[in-house]
Image 1 (cartoon, helix red, strand yellow):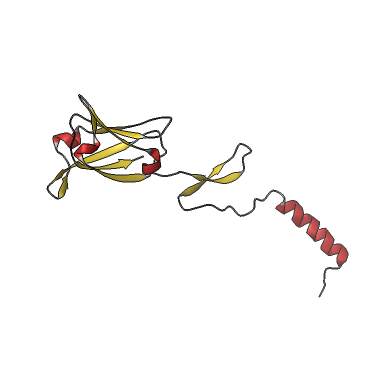
Image 2 (cartoon, one colour; image 1 turned 90 degrees about the horizontal axis):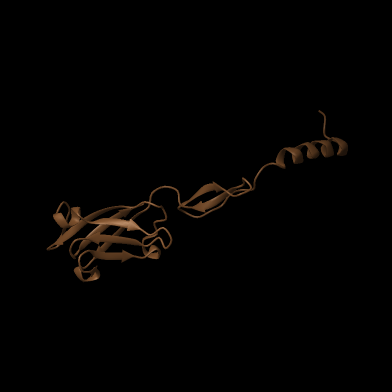
Length: 134
């Protein structure tokens, strides 16, 4: 049985170092992050990836405006980072949230490109809930 002597071990180690030189250390991140690439092409953990949803309950008194009612949800509250947002609204009727009513169907959302705040738009104020997807 042959064993590596000091010269053979040094030769093997040099070959391994060449092989390992291009490898990246273990990538770590937090829940909800994805693997992306920095400007140098290195893999890095980044926020985002996938779709985020946020449910918001509101009272009729939360709306503001006259001809068009608006309700703003700060970016720090909803956490949606994309450039598009989908909203599905429901009107509070007694103790139930009802979809498909005129007020709910006419409600839409916009997202500010700079602040990331989401604004709901409706023709009249109402109590209800909205599911935001972005």
